[in-house]
Image (cartoon, rainbow, N blue to C red):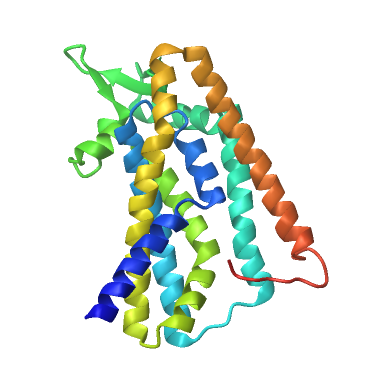
Length: 265
């Protein structure tokens, strides 16, 4: 029982610490830079953590159960995906291309009379019902019902952190699984550790995103120009850090050379 408690505690604490990795923090900073409430930011952090945990658990379990060996170039390619993701997030943040595309498709889906407003730091696309009341795109559901938090965030704001979390989990899954294999002999305990590690990552990312969103939410209400500057700065940071990672992985670690060297971390 003592050993099991130690594994659970260690996994949770290391999961929370894992959430503070620089590439994770840069990614979620870019994502929450235009959020207007800490609650929305915390939910985004949870969604990022869920996506990250899904990949860690899936890939890590495969490595543990089937004793898989990740080839060097594949491992470096998995890590390169994080750099490319950061570049993409930075470009989309700086140019607003994805927002405009989503707005265009949403307006076409809502039909005649649909239009958009920039409200509290977010583009809100809606049309009006027969009584003149606004009907927002986020409130439309194929199933006829959606959770309140889904309506508040919208489909794009739910899928984006999930996708980014999945990519980051792909890059870190091998390192976490190999660490577990060297310390825990029982496969069931090792997989349980991965799950607890993921829960710790979710908790840590929820706290981090809420804290990061605080200055963005405050400046959005009191200093609009400063808020726009912070949002642009987050985009530049994501782009620069992504380019740095791609250079580090591609040339220093040797993915694009004849002598790749990969140390899972």
